[in-house]
Image (cartoon, rainbow, N blue to C red; front, side):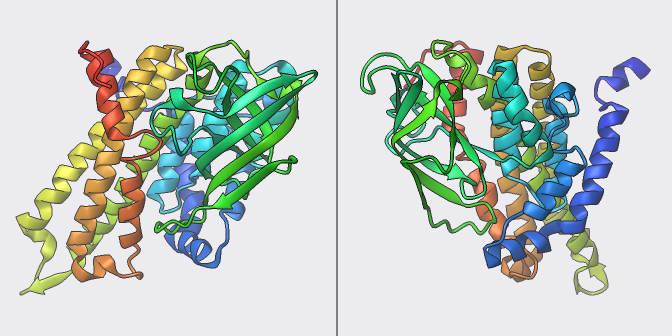
Length: 391
């Protein structure tokens, strides 16, 4: 019985990690995030404190300045920060995507150069894969990398790239063959944000957040040969060394957001009274939506934990399968939880004071990015159920 219980219980070290992150993130919370977003500020203060405490680099090997843990540890950090009202979107990008790819595919010199800064937060690396004309079809990526002596020349554009204004470099996904023909051969390059020919343009978003979105333009950007991470002919596995963590982290962020919304709704339902002396939480019309969301939340959390365990065990295909499922479930429950929280609060749910209205947009993002729920359903239908490819 005890052995069976431990299968569904996180290790003591991770439980302690969660408590430490919760304590730190709660110092900042929703009010800090909203203040930074409204003033054009960033999450730098919290980011660097998280880095100094070792929370940003828990998945980075110890020999390169990290904690030597896994993706399950990093996802737990992000979930706790999000549940405290202070999600750090760039955790999905810098330590999870970029850190994982460099750890698994980089040379020893590249690991020494980039991983310690990623781990302590002093180096923030963005990630550029999405293109306006490619959408969910990564095989249509047209950003190209051409070898020219001891350099690579990158040309193309990217869109909806997070946090470029904060990053010192961007891990760019390009292709090394003709932009219009042949199968995608992704190659990954670390491009400094101050490189000649590299420009950015902000994208105005209805979602208010400290992290901004950008369109990038690469006009014959030259980088040295050692900017290439991995093998130019390494194939898709190098890309998915980062995309599986991206989906796991996206699920964890969504679950943390859902936890925040549910806790806010429950607290309000316990204290708000409009009929006699009974709080509104005594009525099933309030109770049942919140209870349903709680069940769905625990299901989603189990999915991302399984996905992370598979990734940490080196099962890339299994991790991909469950990372997609977790990403889907997380996006759904975040939307359901924020909607239920707003409805529980009534008119107060749409005020700035209670901070839930902006979460509706943030939660909705989880159904779209980094991969749409429709593409996830395509993946599960084809790879898990064995149905014919539909697209």
